[in-house]
Image 1 (tube, rainbow, N blue to C red):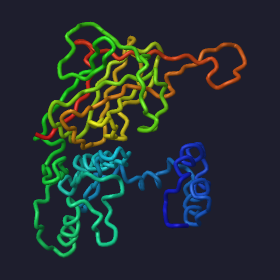
Image 2 (tube, rainbow, N blue to C red; image 1 turned 30 degrees about the vertical axis):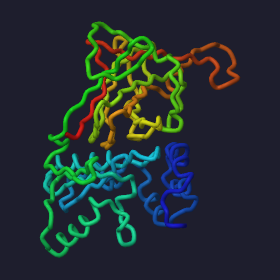
Image 3 (spheres, one colour; image 1 turned 90 degrees about the vertical axis):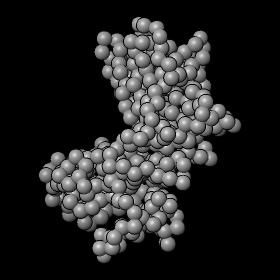
Image 4 (tube, rainbow, N blue to C red; image 1 turned 120 degrees about the vertical axis):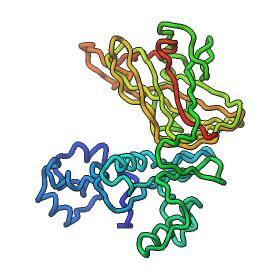
Length: 363
């Protein structure tokens, strides 16, 4: 009624009610509490979600077919004031790369900047926009609608820099000018840290996920782990390290169950000890054991984080509720967790299993 598609109960209705409902005619009532005549007519005519009608209108799989000029605009996670921003760069980058692989690659551009989800949309006189966009959008509109020449190079890839006085332009993504950084997960006694040096030992060499490393993840991510299922690894920057691009993890874990979920959650801790979220894209997910060992290889959304000398990059290795597994006790269960056991997850770190996190840094 207020013109907003999203409302506070939207996500809950989506995840708990709509996904379990097969009757498309009930979707509008579930999500918005009202029936929309237009939706009812469509749902009556095409009640099967797998019908060609719906597939033809599923735009994401057809991005490459778009022949008109298209600019995929996404924000990279803001780091500042300890706030949890809303990052949308992952979808924008994914759509751009899909478009570049289609029949009209020259029509697709991507712009990634230091803003959160909705802040790339102009309001009023457009003064809310980041300088990277403020003058670019009117010039692009004049170019395509009136044929006026562009006052700037229209690169396929335009990415903001941690140094606000400049930006990066390229014909490809990821940017070739950036430096690759690799940090290995290491341990010395009860000290957990990230190091540029690869572990020198051979074999498996694990650390158990049951070290009681406190982590206030509830305030940072939508996860609810047991602190004893969390490890925290720190890297203290010796020099300014402007991170730009996707962060990737390659983890080797040993499981005592067939499958579990494992996540790597990077955050920045400033010199005052205040944590700052780098990305809300979770690195990890469900993993399956093969000969006792599982491998987690995943990438985040594009991020920018100006890690200054003396600040910490902290990576939590954790898991959600899934490491609890059930056994049949042949007894009545009085409480939800009765009869559940903790899955054992070990992070391996050795020359044979070099668990690591990789990212790119501006020179």
